[in-house]
Length: 528
Ligand SMILES: Cc1ncc(C[n+]2csc(CCOP(=O)(O)OP(=O)(O)O)c2C)c(N)n1
Ligand code: SF4
Image 1: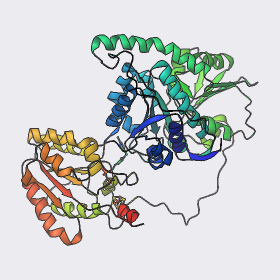
Image 2 (image 1 turned 180 degrees about the vertical axis):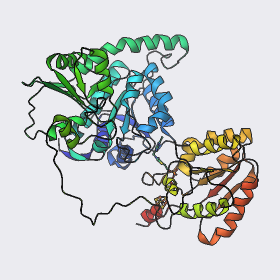
Image 3 (image 1 turned 90 degrees about the horizontal axis):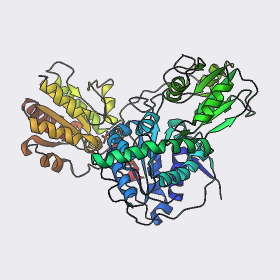
Image 4 (image 1 turned 135 degrees about the vertical axis):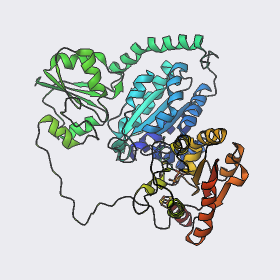
């Protein structure tokens, strides 16, 4: 087979196509976006009829993928780590329903928060759901593990988590593809109550899930994804998980370690292998990108007074992603220092593009809010989050997708009137609609700005599920017609815009203002 040069994300996507998926479901989010985009652009995927358009959010994506699995076909669902919070209800319960066709849940974590609000570690979710977790250390493994993941998903009728991190998702390496598989035929579950989680059924299926844990551990011990490398010097044993294995190896150009090494790429932890290294060595160093999951587990299940070094005892900093230098320091090696960054490369804080429609929306809003005390604008996640920075200083919160409307509502309930929510069009259909419904039902005095730039700009300009539907949705859930306004966010409309905003801030009920102008980046792309 011809070697392909692929990003980690692309390796996963190509593997999914080759392994015979019938559909991929996702909502964009760095660093997972390129998986779905690759399938969307793939001629082969098109010819095979693989469905791949964007879902409204991660929960709808997760559940749609589960529905495809119910129908006997293979599906993949992809999200960034915080997306798993949104999909968590479906994800955790999918471990109880189990799968029919193979299903892989890709969770792309972002340690060091390159592009995220936190650096939560999805392995905890996988462990919480009691499903097998695969954690590749390079692009080839990412490719191979998709095939293996579908195998065990169908063998044990269980969703499988594939956990990756930013550096793996966004770096390229050669990947040798495997033989292509046919898609599954439509086939309903043998037991038609499998997906009916009434308590009596759920209790039985939960027992099955618990009984399968030993099988999952056996797989972890025997699949070859976890490897034990012998070493003579037993003073230290190293456990390196996922990508951390690569960082470790960069410190040993000959690829030979003096001490025992356990490479972990599959969970539940391979108990026998962990016991072996802990019994052989005087101290253990745990290298893992993300939270100290393995370190905590080992401390818990071995408690033999063995010294376990890692993030918990301060050998490695508690936060931020790993890199070869941090690993070198933990090993007691001399740190290698790269070249200094030339002064020409000045740090460039993120900012809204010149000509961005959000700029005019904030200038209009700022003008009207001058008469009030500060601290009353609840915003959301998207390009418009940059309105928190100078020169706009327009917003006072950014928490999670959809939280603008609900936080504005809570603050208004507490007496902060006017309270303003600022949310993007894509974020509105992702998680804003239900919050707006709460506000309508309570007649909360809030003014909601839905910034409609006709795209999901922050993640690269993907199609927005909201396009052409926002007013209808607002009307449909009960916002009064006379309190829905479309503005044209341009300097020349400033005066008329601020009049409308003023009028709606004075109204003691729910109003929706929709500044509508396309993102200049997507306009530019279309012109090209
Ligand atoms: C739960 C979750 N899913 C995905 C993301 C990634 N993400 C951040 S902002 C955003 C969409 C923003 O689109 P929109 O609301 O239309 O605003 P725009 O960037 O276009 O201004 C996405 C997908 C996230 N932060 N959290
Ligand atoms: S990408 Fe579009 S929405 Fe984002 S800052 Fe630039 S113009 Fe504004």
